[in-house]
Image: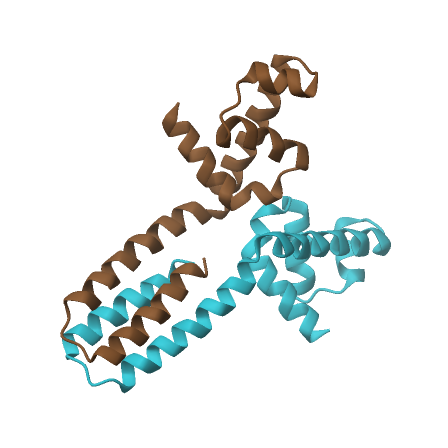
Length: 113
Length: 113
């Protein structure tokens, strides 16, 4: 369950904005705030089954977006490359000003993702 | 028209995969292969107005995806930062092996977008 939750949190970061307001609310309650299906069902006055179906469908949509756009996969690759570049920069004998400028530029490259 | 076409080509690169097959085909014909509305309408045996509406709706969807995900905007920013890093690396006095390793890593970072 933890793995599923972690994956959903990550996918939600990238694609949550493409879901409807209601889907977003339920996904946030269930995966981010750890409400139970029963609590969500009570809150919205709908059946547990309806909550379960809504959350399952929203989760499948997030997975489908990832299968098409690969934003999470690419983000992970960029993070790995970023770490490799940080190691290159920190171990190299380098003019300090250049090291600083390169570090700032590369960190902003990694943040622009 | 050229500006619109260029924008659509770019948005299509990022979000085309989220459109339906039919939307993709029409967008490709119209914006990438420069077919006229009349030619597309004849090809599909539907009215020009229907072709126009389909293309307009698909275009609006591409714009909506960009408004939500900003992939094109972020890509442009990364390209600018990448150019700045290339300039830093080429003007710096740097061990050649390190320059080569950094260049390879940064180019793969830029390609992973």
